[in-house]
Length: 503
Ligand SMILES: [Zn+2]
Image 1 (cartoon, rainbow, N blue to C red):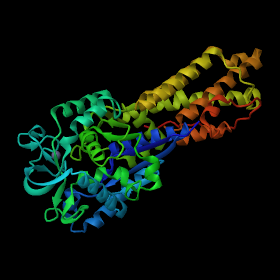
Image 2 (image 1 turned 180 degrees about the vertical axis):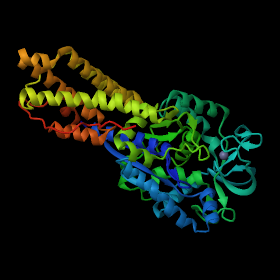
Image 3 (image 1 turned 120 degrees about the vertical axis):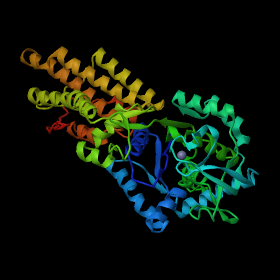
Image 4 (image 1 turned 45 degrees about the vertical axis):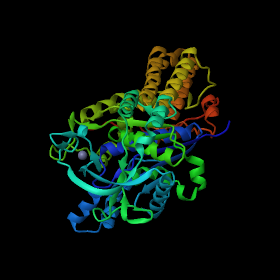
């Protein structure tokens, strides 16, 4: 079987502030898909990083009285630390202030120029610094930005423009034909409605006199690129697009670009337009997630309900946080972080459904057969459950529904818990020890499969389960799935997987 490549990206986080739980969730969604693709044998490359240009960071540095270079160097640190804290498996962390990004973005710009898609014009409009974009009448409420509730600045500048309108119909065609898949359906409809209204040409530069912090426009040192223009190009500059490197050749186009719902129009509109103008392949899919609230309310510093991803990982551990964000939060919709709910989910899904099943099965096998499995004779019910779980799991992960795929694992564990109650190996052990050990061997097989499915979600826990089972999956995924532990295989003793959270 030929190996497929799988390139996945997150949006790059804007460094004008600390990482919040929304950044963590997006990184985890991409991590889960990256790990899944490695698991099934795809040659995977996972990119995340930071967006470091634009007027917001420039103003923050000015206000703080430090150089903007120093500010971004400081602010990038917590984002890089977060990748470690979350146990991310990314292959690269790109910073848009890097030299490779700047020259790569310039090459892309030049391609747009060569295609006659860049022109100069005077623009007068209302600019929201929070959005880093000019606002149209629809984005205004009482003269203020509908998102930031701030009055935009009136700006009149001579700028370079990108002929985005030219690509409107082509983009629409790509989306309606699913050559560019947008998950979920509701977001796909939203962008199609926007394309129906029509995309406008977009101001693609700022005069350096107004904003000295950005990627210089090629052959015009009086202008820097519009922050979205350079930011979007990170997905290819990271692969060294400038030199048409082996990395770029191998991994572009991306199979999945994970973003938040607020930046869909930039990705499904401007970014695709840029790629078409540059005659580059377009990504296969965009996965769009929602926003997170905290205890039912919008997170805000004034309400004091901002969830810091570092704090909750310190409190609960990384795998439980990964689990909550990937399974409890709807993958493509808004979701809530709630401490009581967190404890409930931890108890029901992790401690009980997974943890207890694992403890009971392994302890009984130790007790009744010195921890040794028999030859697996899988019942019809077990075979069926495994098959259904795998089918749902693969299907949902391919549809960008990480929550439903996680639910399939939980359903498999539910089955395991019912199976143990129905068959009562502790009763059988007294009269039919062989039968009891047969049931336990089946449950070990169920746990082995569960551990493989859990790898993208709970990498540490999955590794502990496999260690206790003395099991190392083979490099070939299909072989791993089909090969149960051999007769007489010995499992190890150990602690419970999820200690109770003290409340
Ligand atoms: Zn705004």
